[in-house]
Length: 246
Image (cartoon, rainbow, N blue to C red; front, top):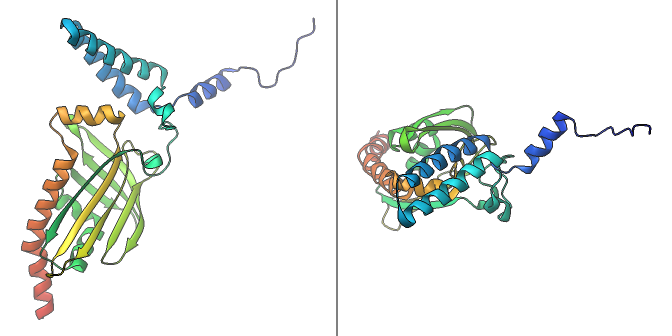
């Protein structure tokens, strides 16, 4: 029998492409799942009773996700983290928000935040921000267990003296998006509200583990805004006052 010509037969390159397209978990998350899953499984083997089987079950599920590159939960939610887009796809990330009232003019506070390289001065988790141009910047942020996360971001909406909104660019290890609002109050102060949405490397499991390690993003944001209030009222208000009197 003469051989049948199949121009798109399963060559190694095509096999790899098909396998990749069937995955929805990025490599960094697969590595994290493998490490965490193996740790939970080992902890389960050292225990007895219900705790043993619970740890083995969760650990086995994470190891399976690491090996296959697929997550059934992501599939049901129509999430594909392996082939990323800007920001948090579908707004399905973890959302936190906090607000503080600052005795300082909205325009002064806006100008401080708009210079993104100022943020490490008042936000403990932000190690550095390098502003590439008027819209794009590179961030280095401290994570749980001594990790450092880096990503590029862009400003997607801006209203002078009132609003700054941003999103991470494709390829970010932690996809995120958010906004900061500056709302003058009737007594001359400014209400600063920050809304932040992010997608941790291991999804909701990553949030839970981070909190077990002592990192609470919501509490951290509230504490950072408190620090910002103290700084702004002591430094920015005084500087603005000297300019007005000059």
